[in-house]
Length: 142
Image 1 (cartoon, rainbow, N blue to C red):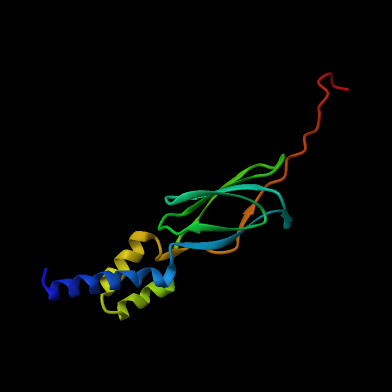
Image 2: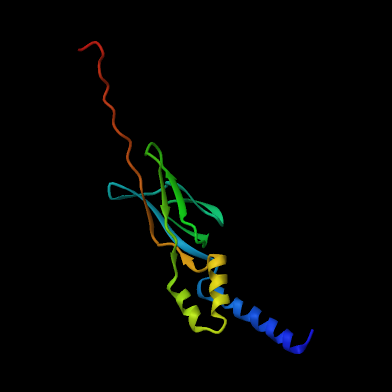
């Protein structure tokens, strides 16, 4: 291998390494559950995307792996109706800075491919619906 080829390869590796500097491969988000405007402590939530699944008890901070996929969330609490939702991934503003750097196409491709170009909003608020009260009806007409 010639010295020139070695330097070109080293530069290429170094430039792709900057891609994750802007976002990293994970982020910490806050998760809380509410019902009728009141916070609910103790709801069990599962968060998942193409990079993994994380289980928390609300309120919580959880570190998730970033992905271009939405973050799926399912929370349950006692007799409350469980709630399933999706939190969309959004592109990080710093990814646009990649175009200012040498090797920007490589850095941008690595950011997108690794998921580090995206993040999720925080806090994530999951609304749970209280159990419905049922009234017994006397079938004899009394």
